[in-house]
Length: 87
Image (cartoon, rainbow, N blue to C red):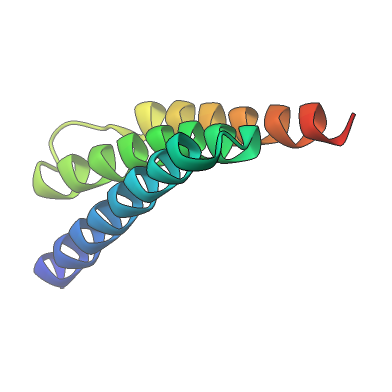
């Protein structure tokens, strides 16, 4: 069961990394600021998934605070982008 969790977390890491790259490419092509804020959000969500993979691979060390902080920072960037673009 632990191996399946590790594989799924790795897939989530690769998916969030791909989304981050695509969002940065979209921002570079169109200069739409909401794409920038979304890409910055995915930077932190990718870091969150990275800490999850490390946490599952090495259960002796608790990376939960790191995961929570990176998830919070990602959502804060996205929220700031939504509020800034609404004005």
